[in-house]
Image (cartoon, rainbow, N blue to C red; front, side, top):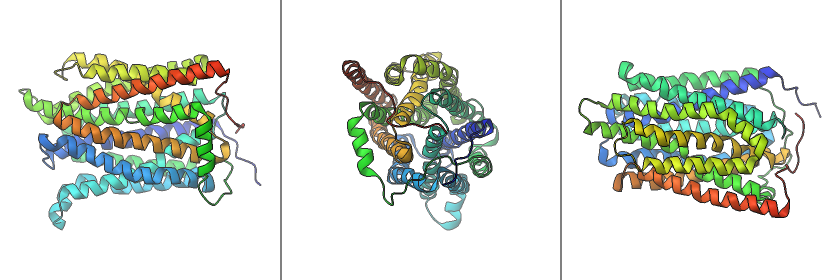
Length: 428
């Protein structure tokens, strides 16, 4: 058996860049969706919550069917090929979305159906990319080095999201939303090239010809920390999706009530608030890396869920989202989201056997997909029939509920005198 390649600093730096590009792709696709549906496909306010949420729910259902199996395939055949092909699929189909209105006229097909198809294919592509990048980060680290590297990965995630809302989402008012929607295609194709040229495999290949469901299930049953990481993924992975979708939609349709504010200007204002959240995440990531090393993974999950939950509940007190008061709950959401980006992943990676790390992270991301479907489906209904802030309030309550479970895990660990040491780890 050949020795694993030596991981150099350039491999880490390439991984950080690819993480940022992936976040630019995923965030920009989501951020432009409400504006494109309103301005180009003319979706009215009465259906906005349902259509926006429904598109995301459909993509997440398909991701749910795929992401766990892709984790197993990455254990069998490696992370690099799956990431590269995911980027290629996402990049090629990203070209369809801004052309859906024109294609609908030419082909005599409903433009919304074409947009649905494009979004589904883009989502399937990113389902092959994002989970494997998290797993690859685990491959490139040990328990000791993992918080530091995950903090840097989280920083680049926040940087990519912040770049979208602070810069790229200001462009539609100058060049139009269709032009901005071409950027994800370029980003994804660049990502495929970088993965192929500059990343290396280190993981031990799994010999089993089927998904190790029994091993994964047994680990989840016996490791309280792993269960907490899965529950945190369920309730918190959807946080930025909800912010990007429902907050953006709220601003755009609230713009109809404000004299002198058109939809592009409303989207730019929403982009400012969401960009502020991204900036808070960006600046607080290093502090979370320190907190995790100093106080522990479980404690970081608890604090992240608390701050995020309070922030989401705070949005329910906002009447006019275009006032500066929106930045106060946004601050709490950003602080909490930074912790929820790092701590659950580190907790899951620490408790995963290296041979089935991809399968464990596939299950972890499956829990996140289920959470997104759950919160988006209910959130779309709440947005249309209750209020624009109802989806955010619902998510805040869920975060606080999982936080209570985290406190229970912390107490159980103290009573049992257990630590969150991994079952097995190795030096890459």
